[in-house]
Image 1 (tube, rainbow, N blue to C red):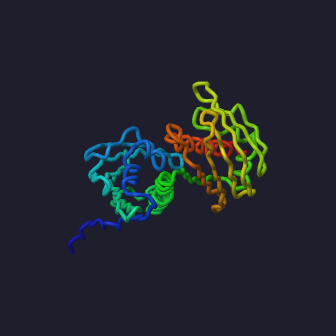
Image 2 (image 1 turned 60 degrees about the vertical axis):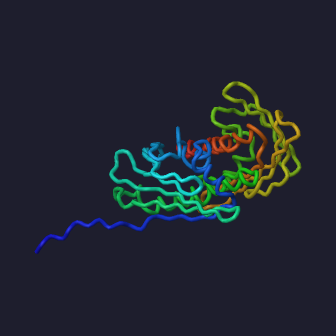
Length: 295
């Protein structure tokens, strides 16, 4: 009897679709501008929506670093972006495609990731991991980024491996806030808080250059373990008041944290997402360090 041929079965591609309340040009910019990309996805040294452009980035997962190597295969402005996706040191090659469909002033986004069956049969490359990752990236991070920018507001969502009670303490007690508040390289030498509805606060952030960046505001609304609403006036932008809402949601023993903030004008607005992203990353690092030392 003749041996049966070794046939590789092609799996159904992973597809994630969402409709964004933002015009297609804004979504395309978020997909193709490297400074925008790092606000909702991965930090890239360089990126250009040009066929043949190669880029790379690293992601750590459960203690292992995975080096992603990609190459743009298609780039049709405001319509379609595709690039290959493989892992250095591992077999397999796949294709990621973003398709944009204008629907009036809204945009339907379809993400397709095909060729996942070519990767090694390891837990790290399980379909469920890709599905969860892309659903979070497209359905939450990218959606919040473009809709917030369209509405003149920044929206960031992160899930922290900590219960709400602990997260609330880290946000509401000065001795904890001093450990993580501010972008990478910043410290918080000034932290005065009258934490109650109608109470005021004053923070002084000191940058890596040694310059102080003071701001102050008032707590408008406080619901324990659920919500904080506060204003902020930067000393270098007098008369312009920002409004920030931070919500804490239970997520299976973890905490889903969402930060919404109105956008300041000029250069401050352009750096807003990065500043908050780095600040929340410092908070995550603090929690990881505490867990590592069993505190």
